[in-house]
Image (cartoon, rainbow, N blue to C red; front, top):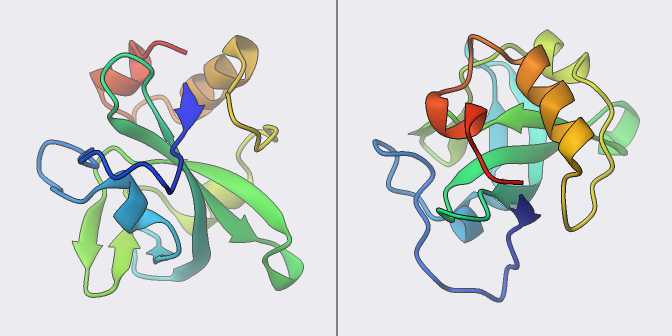
Length: 128
């Protein structure tokens, strides 16, 4: 699974119902399932095979210095924000993963296990 290059303008939708591109998600404000502000979306990680966005990183912690991973599955636009299907606390407690160009197999597995029940089959079966 790789991060989306903001220079790539290929249309990649967030999920089947969202209709937003990965590039469009970057920089948007992420809010949790209850509408609480989490932070700004940094990177969008897409499935290597399908190009579907699966994970976003969100600036959390003091001054947004920590990047936390959250699943895109179940997200929807909410004005200028992206409303995620998980809580702020769940995102802040997610496993620490390096925010580089590619998620390693063991990191992807840790995220899938942590968010099990909140992610769809596409994330469960994603090529990394």
